[in-house]
Length: 220
Image 1 (cartoon, helix red, strand yellow):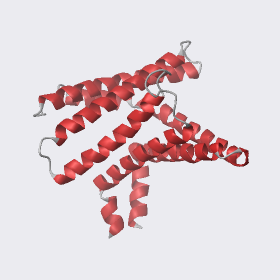
Image 2 (tube, one colour):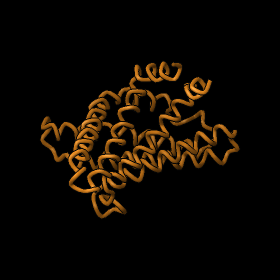
Image 3 (cartoon, one colour):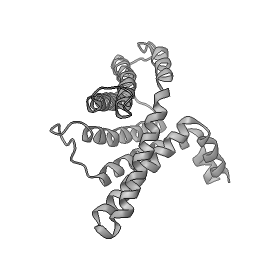
């Protein structure tokens, strides 16, 4: 019951609900992609799961229309990272915040173009938003590696390793969604995108559970 209560409490928050939607979406894409490749007998169920995944992804896109203010306040609060001791971490974090800040309006414009609210080329804006997301992930990876060399305690190293693995999985997908011709862009089958996204999502859920103490409650 403690674990169930912790889950219910998490789902009352925006971030907790977003993690669940993200995890379910990628799981549906993983299973759906596998079923589609197994032949006509299971292709219909697979296609339905892929449709569910697409709808959940669209849900998250709409919810992110309201993230700009929170991101701006976080960026403003962090500023130039005066509290960071490591100059490299400070520079990388500032650039990462800038990439995150630019990601949101690009995605909003792309969404509005797909919804025919704006008459612009949505593909270009989706590409820009994905590029900023990928850049943010790269900078996040660089920041984690810088911090891991500073003699952090074991718990912090484990936490940063989980974040690093999550970012790497997301980065692989981000490259896939860039225009074809760049590295492995466009080459992943749906099930592989779902697998990487599921791994990243579950690691994120694990981090959140660990931070809130669910794991300890569930074990007691």
